[in-house]
Image (cartoon, helix red, strand yellow):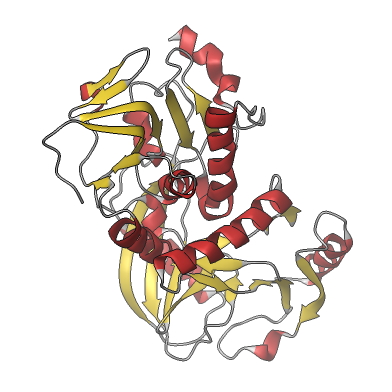
Length: 359
């Protein structure tokens, strides 16, 4: 952490430091670009997320949009980051999808034979009694190319050990940002450009409030379950993901109307009801938390340049796929800014430019 008195000149100001902000900072660091991160230490949605890398949509057994590109880039990226922060943050783990009936088994077998999914799904069913304490009478389907990233540990270690002199722990004051043709000034910082990676907080950003960032609240539980194996991520009605030391992430709810981060008894009861459907072991609830995911109306990320200011950029809208998508999205944005490479149309915020000029 640094305190500013004299004028600091950098290439880029990064606002926000969840998983998206970290990934963009790493793109700059690797290329020896100067930058400063401005973000409070408070928990973001990334801190609370399970950190699951999953190239599939398990509810419908479909591949994620551009799944192969995102997955291949992310796996190498986090392995490199683990070496950089010198702590164990990357955990390759299979996901076991619990089937409810024979129809789901058959649908899985068909999907696992399809070209888009056969590289991710094990066609052979996993026997339901393999793991004590998990109710799976119709067995499991296995996602083989999946993993868990310890978001909280990664963000903390990266900020403290990799960029300790390139981070300011404060909430950005958007009104104090001066946008000029050839530079950006924020208090004592002068930069060539600014990249906003604020997650759902972007709804209060005056530069990008025109974008349809709808947001969805997610409540989660952290439980202690000493008898449950830690070598698998279970997917029943909800995810049950190991965190180490017999702690497990349970979640999450999906609420579109409540935009507060207050935990609710309704959310807790829903999580416990879903967990009871497949976990048959005693456990202790350690924590109950809530955050707002940065979800977008068309379910695609938000990347690109401000319609009016050529030196103001955005990396946002990763929703529930932040750990999977952020590494490659950050490279796309870097190449767009520095190398004039076009962004994919589905992710470029130009798709909403009419809303900007309508406001």
